[in-house]
Length: 202
Image (tube, rainbow, N blue to C red):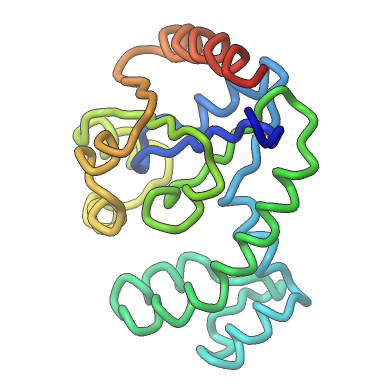
């Protein structure tokens, strides 16, 4: 690329689409994965200013006995309360973005993946050269997530409704992996794209 910035591929997908399995496959090929979910946990670790502010604003009942954030209780609250969701995003999104940028800059692999469930709903996509969507039928997303998280169908459907729908994601994708088969098929699709990304990163 003309400005010599390393290539960043944003990878996203709806809940239960298999995004983590895909990023694991890229990581196995030696590619650095910056995970926005992990970053979002880091910025609210015990002792961080963000967690202190959450406890002050929402109450200490949103902290677990060990001092960590009660993420389940908070998730339920923000689905019920749009104002709190907006307040929380204003607090956390700039901190998350700052940390993501730092991790991207420190990556040493030929290209870097930025994995984020909200890549397209936030300004995180502006950090990427390409967008890869891991796609799966919504019925399969629901089935996988219920098996994985032990959550109710209603909770999962609420999460799905809060994200871009399948067509909105596909419309913004440069690359798509349809993950409706087994793990071997997914890994094969990842290896094919890996070769493409190595080419465009030269």
